Image (cartoon, rainbow, N blue to C red; front, side, top):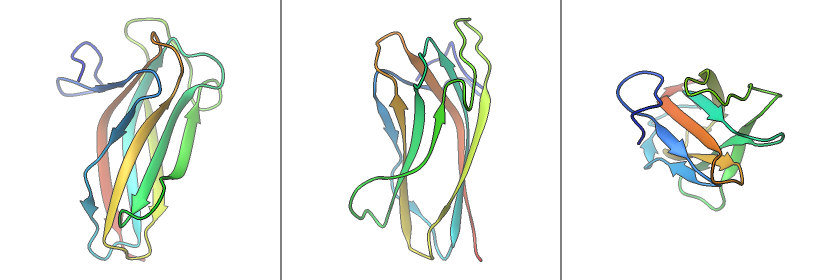
Length: 127
């Protein structure tokens, strides 16, 4: 957790070189869709780098990619200390399954690359 970079509250999470941030299993009840909302900020990335949101339903098999956010396509880069924050939102169909795990993965390859994640919310809805 990092105190010097945050969207709100007192801290955010930094993804370093190819790191991932993984949730515990989240109980869905009877939700048909899960909406993940979060804020992210990046510094020192190169073209083609960014972050990915992955998920597993009912702890089955491999991680599935819900979406990628890529530099110069989805957000701008900053070398400033107070880099801009961007909002990310993705909806995942869960088909009424009972549990989901989510993972934010850095798509960056250098030690000075900085991706920050903050204010993650997960909400469900029924069809």
